[in-house]
Amino acid sequence: MTTRTQRLQQAIADTGHTFQGPILGGGDYVPVVHDGDVAYVSGQVPRVGRKVVVTGRVGGSVTLAEAQQAARICAIRGLLLLQAQLGDLDRIARVLRVGVYVQSAATFTQQSEVADAASALLKTVLGDAGAHTRTSVGVYQLPKDASVEIEMTVRTRPTASGTA
Amino acid sequence: MTTRTQRLQQAIADTGHTFQGPILGGGDYVPVVHDGDVAYVSGQVPRVGRKVVVTGRVGGSVTLAEAQQAARICAIRGLLLLQAQLGDLDRIARVLRVGVYVQSAATFTQQSEVADAASALLKTVLGDAGAHTRTSVGVYQLPKDASVEIEMTVRTRPTASGTA
Amino acid sequence: MTTRTQRLQQAIADTGHTFQGPILGGGDYVPVVHDGDVAYVSGQVPRVGRKVVVTGRVGGSVTLAEAQQAARICAIRGLLLLQAQLGDLDRIARVLRVGVYVQSAATFTQQSEVADAASALLKTVLGDAGAHTRTSVGVYQLPKDASVEIEMTVRTRPTASGTA
Image 1 (cartoon, one colour):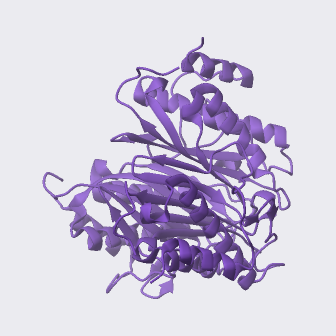
Image 2: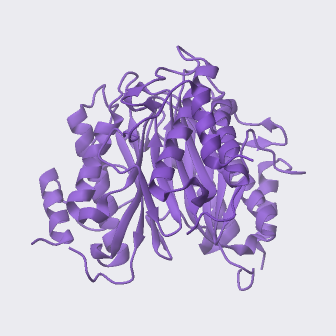
Image 3: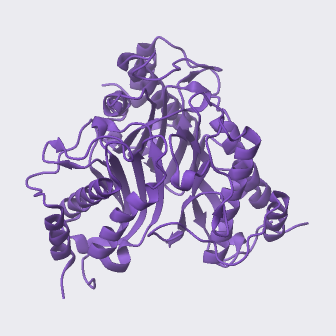
């Protein structure tokens, strides 16, 4: 039986990237606000270290598969930020809402399929707690020409006991 | 005096569509997360049965009136999902926030007028509890070429007593 | 030592605009829902009185500096609405989340830099309570051709004691 941390490490390994050091943001905001038993995670672009690794319009210069990879990296960043904030991924009681923004070409309509890659990762790592509501839209531009941006809201619990 | 359920049925009849069987979604997420006394509803497109019935760019191939019809269908789907989750529409204490995404032509700026159709429906069905905060934006693309997508967050109460 | 109200008045003066009378919205929704200890603020465009004062695409007819001014006006409107609803800005315990929508030209990717102007203003006025999570995206159109739209969610406290 694996832990959430082990499954997150596997998901990271599957991307072919390494995430070392602090997760860097790109503006005058904080990555996570943990307020009572709800934690809000700022919108994450597919940044690894200092570099946004998937840029361009999905359905144009960026394929669906590349956008799905971007979505996974955004979700991984969110989980790493929550892990740093909460001390333990097992303190995530439930992912409440995920917002997925896809920088889209004019005729690209598979935003849900891009978002599914992030949703599947959250369920793989967190189990039933990873099932969430979601809003996916196709936007015109994202910061740093990122192909995908993902924000999350989660409910937390005081201790990490009793999770698989 | 009518009930919320009766008023929702009237709103459905006014669309000319029937909503039978479960409300189907389009991805790897859940339609509603009910957490404590807050329920989050995933972004809804104007899908009736398996078919998205209003597609295309608003202000282009889609008129304002057609987009308003789409917005009403999105709001109806949200209410039907909440009814299924909560067991009774009377358990909605307050609509907290509505997010409205309009797939817009390049010069279309009446996103608020599109959203107003959903807002009016929520107030008609729910009364004062249907008054909400709202964010309306014009996006470049929506899943399945949908013309409108609407998400909702509502506060719930344990029982359905005392509502009109 | 200055109060939050004084610092907001200074921020308003810095815009060169005056905000007198009620803050007007543009649709069939309410400006703020205060539910328990969370207040939701509807998406604000840079409207002063009845007029949206910054319109057009950022990176096109609108410069980064003009968009930053628009972002500040949106944030000021949000704070004025919260002040009216709560009676005192000191009742804001923490800004939880800020959503920033920038009506962007096709190749404009500095949405974060636009949003930073609003974020800095919130921190200037509210101090540590103004630090927030944020999601910034570039949308295709905004209501009334507004260049920027900003929504906020804040946690409140029952009384205004103990704030700087």
